[in-house]
Length: 260
Image (cartoon, rainbow, N blue to C red):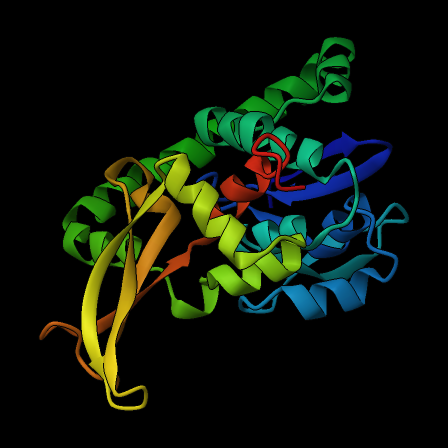
C-alpha cells in the first residue's frame, strides 16, 4: 500500500496513492483538517460514494480498517466546510498535492525529503516502489486502450448521485440560487436558452429557461435528462447540474465574485 501524508495547518492528512489517478483519502483526516467538530457525522452526512475501508497501521503498529473516500466525496467535504481556510485546503490539494501525485506517483513532503537525505536506503526503497507502481500503471494503461470506448462512456457520464443541483449548492454555500445563476452567466460559465410554452395551469404563455454550459466549462456541468417529464419543444426536458469538479471550482470563485 502506497500510503502518503501531507500536513495542513498542523493536521496530518493521509492519502493512499496505489492508483495515482484515483487516490483515496482517509475520511477522518480530511474532516478534521476542514474543521468539522464531529468528523464521523460529517463524513456520514456529506459523503455519498461507496464506503471503502482500507487497512492502515497506526502509530503503535496496529492495523485498523479506516474509511477512505475518493475525489467526489473529497469535493463534498470541502464545499460543506465552514472553515475559513477551506479554500486554502482546496487549493493545496488540487493545485499541489494531486498534480504531484498524478505526475510523479508520489507527494514528497519536506519531512520525506529530509528522511531520504539522512537515509539513502529509504530513498532507494521509495523509488523502487515507485518504479514498480509505474510498471503496473503501464500495464493498466495498455489495457485501458483496449477498453477505450467503455472508459470514455464512464468519463462522459458522472453518476447522478455525484451531481448537485444549483439549489442544493446555493443552500450549502449560503447564497441565493438566482444570484448564483446570474453570476455564472455573467462570467460565461453557463448560458440560458429562452422559449415560450403554453401553461394549462396559468392559461397563458409563459417563458422558461434551459441552462447549458459553455464548451470550456463542460467538465463542470452535466445535463440530466428527464424522460418521464413533458417534452419541451419536442425535446426531452433536461436539467443542468454541477459535477463534483464544478462544485469545487464554483466554490473557489464565490469570494472572488463577491457572493460571500
